[in-house]
Length: 142
Image (cartoon, rainbow, N blue to C red; front, side):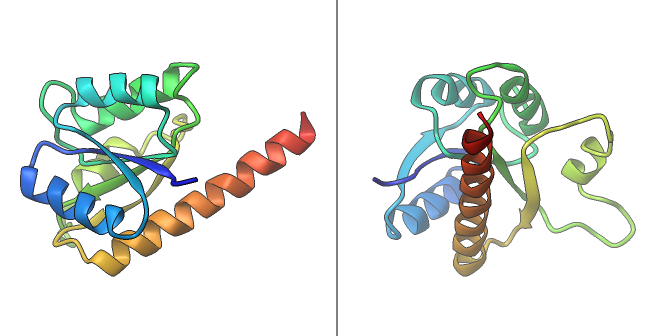
């Protein structure tokens, strides 16, 4: 069965590139242009992974992350952030927003733009593999 990945991105070109790469490699891809749409799609479609950026229309990626993490039906959906290349002097938006050690959000180290197709695929595959192993361990304990 194809893994379902939601791309939540308001920049069309980035969304299209991610969709093309993932569909070309056998993933079932859903798209959302706003954080609000991404939340509702996640709730009803239950993707195995959400790829998003720190900035989205209506709800930014950080608020989307927190909304998904606090809803029972979506709290186990991991997120992969795509963010602009950080400078050495200033941390990226995502890094800065997620410094709170109290957060137990399902976030993987961000991918930086410009996006490389190989990096995207390796990150998605590795993250889905790790998530699957964790879920398998949880089911064994139950």
